[in-house]
Length: 353
Length: 253
Image (cartoon, rainbow over all chains, first blue to last red):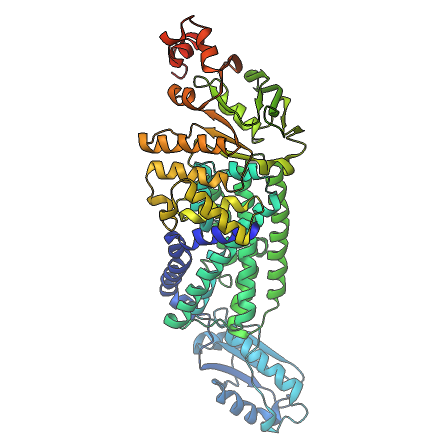
């Protein structure tokens, strides 16, 4: 029974031109618009290819013997170190337009970072830590110097960011996929046929959930492929990214079906769910990047989209993310709780909406 | 179940919405194999009665006994013996004719080869075999009505409930549907039929009940109803009987 229901719901959803518009064209267009609008903004989040660092070193510094090798290694990685023996570091930074200033003392060092150059500061700090851990006491052995960019810096461009994030955002708008079908069902009172047949709330829910999740997934796959082919969007770890987005679709569908089954009105469902999803997206980085957003961290963390967005962005630029597991757990929990609520509501309701 | 056995019985069937009584202690018995007509002005309680019989709406009081068993308590077992043809065109426009029949017939657990046979049989029955691969949204009003019927008969129900199945269609389609109802009845199905077209009811129904204000106010064959009004039944139509019994005042103004 359920196979034929799923099959025919799926046919109706795949035949709907509004679904093609919503899940293939819309994410691509929105991503393109946001990418072009925020290109400059996102560029400032990247560490520049080369930047200048001022430094001062005392004669008894732990780094005194290896400073030349250290400078050479950094230079190869785009960090130019200029010595300033005299003057207040903060004045020097302002006067000489330095991003970072390092003051190497006997057994410690001070790092002065410009507020606008956090990435450069982090890069330099990471490099010094590497040296302290790996070179000392053989500081003069230049071949052992390793400079790596710290893994906590998500250096992602606007093209990748919005190309990925908008896929996740539209995953949360999944109810539109079933809107036409459910509206027609309500208008022509097709639900009475379901009641008459004695179909259980569980079967009816699954027969709606599976086609929506499948159709939205297929649409977003095509949209993501278009992003990769035409805009060169990098997804990083494709398998984990796909899993994160799939679970978001599951959570969104289950959540929005709860609203539909509770209100029995598609208009109310679309208004309520889109308002909630917009707020989640607003705080979760769907429009303004979550890195630059001035919203309180607590509000970001209350948004399930934030975890998915962060996982996808970090997977794109680093290939791994601690947020993958969190995102999967949160989406899974929302999906399961809302599924139970849906089955309960459909069981209580006499005439299926 | 033998002919003349009661296939459906309502006992004290009552539906109230707040203080408004829509159906009031309704007690009807429908015999196996008969065509039973239910007439009444708008707001008389016909649709609510149908919905309670089909278990779509819960009664405030009373019960429905179907095939000798309480319908509510044996719903899963009994629902496959009941077919309901709603007045609304309860079909999906974005599905082809055969897909609509497949969707609604499969709800009764029919699948595979048997399901394909039932789809062909149902579409053939309503004269839509040639159009099985056409989308329902491209159909005329009459074709949609026929498809609406096909979607309700694929599981071979013993009792078929028709809720105004000929509204808004041409005389040919209406005639076709009435012929099919008669054919279904000849093949053993019991029929409950509601309509505002008196001549249709008179033509196909064995017994007719007239309902008003939630109650059955007259019941019997067409001739028995006419005799309630005049002695010479040849001088009166069923419509005149209906208007005499229920009054000429507008009901939905």
